[in-house]
Image 1 (cartoon, rainbow, N blue to C red):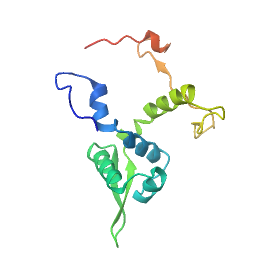
Image 2 (cartoon, one colour):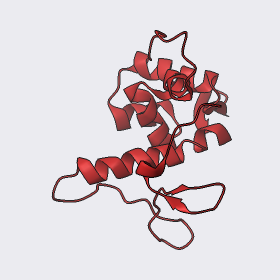
Image 3 (tube, rainbow, N blue to C red):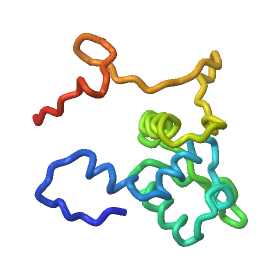
Image 4 (tube, rainbow, N blue to C red):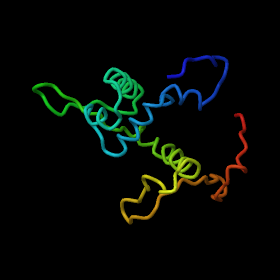
Length: 146
């Protein structure tokens, strides 16, 4: 996690990085989106240290990105499910994936292609103006402080 060195800044990106900015955290969210729910599933998928995984899962639960739900009583066992807040990270994950596919992919192509569950069509992230509904390119985005 980032350490706060920008106390005098008001920045939504910095606040978001406090929750999901550590490398393992976004990979945990990626796996949760893919259907991984149990501690051992994350452990196997990520090859992460148990204590680091436990810490990151606890942080995601604390911030409401995941919820910890019991699935077995004896012995007590829990799984981690994405909340609505966690599912709202899907466009950000897709944008990162698209950027990686464009700039970091090898000749074999993207390792994963996001598809629409209903029709099988390719899913892409697009910027759209809320005012006129036009598709916007990144060069046309101007930050405006409110």
